[in-house]
Structures are given as C-alpha cells and as structure tokens.
Image (cartoon, rainbow, N blue to C red; front, side, top):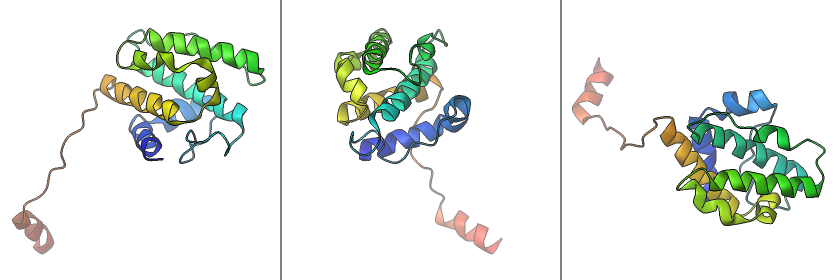
Amino acid sequence: FIVMEAVLDKLKLLDYEKGLLRQRNLPPLPRGYFTSESLWPAKAQFQYLYKLLCWLLQLTSSKGDHDLWRLLSPDALDADALSCAQTLLDAIGKAGAPIAEHAQLGPHKLRAAAGIEVCKLLNTMTNVALSAAGFAWSQPQRQAEAEIEDEIEG
C-alpha cells in the first residue's frame, strides 16, 4: 500500500484529475487499487491500468502523443487484452531508462493489473513524468521562531 499511496500523491502532483480522469471519463483511483487482484473486477482494473500507463507514457515521451489509446476497446477479450499488454510493454521498453527496466514484466503480469511489480512500474513512471514536467523534490523550508512570533503578534 505504501508504494501505491506514493503513486497517488505523485498523480495528484501531475494533475491526473484534469489530464486523465476528465478526458477519459475515469473515477479517481481508490487507495490500493493496483495492490490486489481480488478486490476489484480484473477487466476494469486492467482497463484503468492501461489508460493510466498510456497517459504516463504520453507525459514522459519527448514525442508526446502515441497511438496506444485506440488499441484497447471496452469490450476487449482476454486475448486482446494480452496483446494490448504486450504492445504497451514494447512501448515501455522503448521509453528509455529507468522506465525500460520494467519491460520484462511480462504481459500476463501486466494483464493481472496488480501486485508489487505493477506498483513499482507506476512509481517509476510517475517519477519520470514529474521530472519531465520540471518538478523537483526539495526539503521543506522552516520559518525561524522570531518570524512566527512576528506573524502571531502582527
């Protein structure tokens, strides 16, 4: 759950509500959504993961848009979903380090849309997307006690 919570925080920093949810008519991600296969319907879970990964690839790519969106239809059969998973993994493999390191995940693992490997992939992709957006982590700046007292008195 810890990795998935970090992913959710990073998605919020990337403004996924506006960039993905509204545009693709998706609900907000529940906490821990990709941590277990048994909690949600597998087909819906894969559909969501696929769309999320397509969006993150779009954010991390210097080329911008890609044609992966059109591959997965809402009524895709398992064989279609595995084919889409493999195509997505191929795109991940071409994305460069550190994302490409996750290309060996395998289509069945990606199709399962759950587990630590999926969460690690999302974590890496959100890190790269934040970096591509110019976001940089920094230490919090603390106010001196004198400044706080001045604000209280002021």
